[in-house]
Length: 181
Image 1 (cartoon, rainbow, N blue to C red):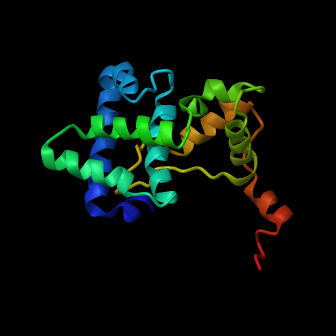
Image 2 (cartoon, rainbow, N blue to C red):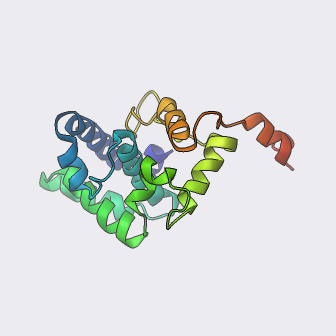
Image 3 (tube, helix red, strand yellow):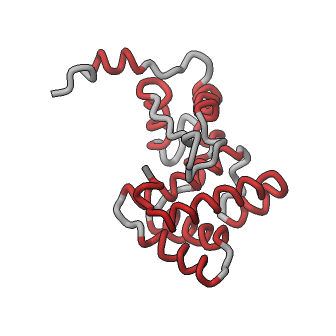
């Protein structure tokens, strides 16, 4: 959906950013994470999920120009799309929207008394009830292919331990999800 909402030019820029970041993670993960102010994220999947969420949130909250205009300008001027996106993530997603990088860190999510517990609570609901895994589709995705079902299931197991698995059938049964009015 992000790709459709972004339009062809912005979607292509996001796909190029994803490809370049995936490459940079293989060669120098610390530097690329530091560029985004996310060098505290040791797990590459956590970092890539942060980057995917930053773009998705922009469209979800109806402000695509905050992302797409700077990317289009950078592309036109031959500037680094990765650096432009890093600036967007730090200034818009983190500073303006108040997102914390730590809320994407599985080690932080393991803490049972974190300063901001909403991320841990949300992930518990995802991991135990709804399986709202925001994975990269197989083709034409703006998300990294590393943000897949395995990443999400591993996150659930790592953060909440064995035995926490989304039981979507029971959630639908309990809340009436099979007969929506």
